Image (cartoon, rainbow, N blue to C red; front, side):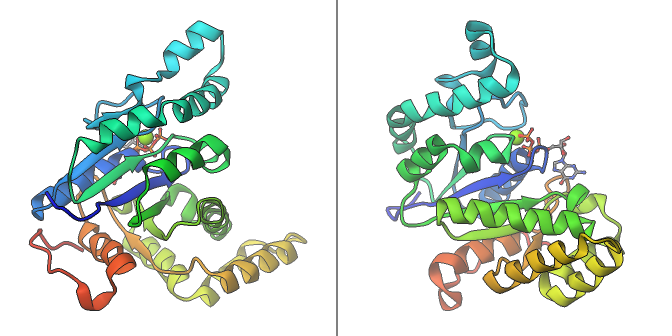
Length: 265
Ligand SMILES: Nc1nc2c(ncn2[C@@H]2O[C@H](COP(=O)(O)OP(=O)(O)OP(=O)(O)O)[C@@H](O)[C@H]2O)c(=O)[nH]1
Ligand SMILES: [Mg+2]
């Protein structure tokens, strides 16, 4: 418990990227490192029991109820839910204010476009975020292992950053599903953009190559090449590095608190 303002981290990413698992794994890692974390579920469609959130938006808005009540399909219900959640922001904030932990970890809706493009998400993030808030965007290896998928994720992540104007960090999730050489290749792209550029040229020997390379150059110069932190929620690895990156975001290297948690890769 702390008297300082908590660090709030929103976990965003494409459907199935591993957001919920990462919130669970990171909250466990933080606890093992001697920190308390409040877990918030902002996904009204979350059906997994994996997370036992302290604050759960489903207390106010449930996707299944909306589908039934208004005869909506899952996507329509998600959009309606996003807007209804914004109307409950005071209640959500009130529920959150009862916890006084060092960290607030927020699981966001399955589809990233709902989080990124609805005004209501922005209203919720603005209402819940203090000065120490950041978004961590998950790169799903299913997409990130191909150069064009990797670039698409960079674009999505830039969109999220553009919308929310919060500090960003980037996780490569589910690293246990990658072969070591695949992992090294993806990390290499995030460290040395020219390696990615060369692979795009190999992958896209089509007229599209001009568009893709122009996009690539634009992203390269505006920059989410900030380092991709490899994590596996299944194996609990990578979270020490993520912890340090999150601390650097707000404190600068010189203020790094040593962590008492288990060191990992
Ligand atoms: N092998 C492996 N599987 C993982 C890992 N993290 C998540 N998964 C699996 O990936 C699938 C999606 O994980 P979730 O954590 O539900 O992903 P999400 O982004 O919250 O998904 P939605 O909210 O439905 O968009 C599940 O089957 C998880 O078990 C991981 O580190 N390793
Ligand atoms: Mg989820």
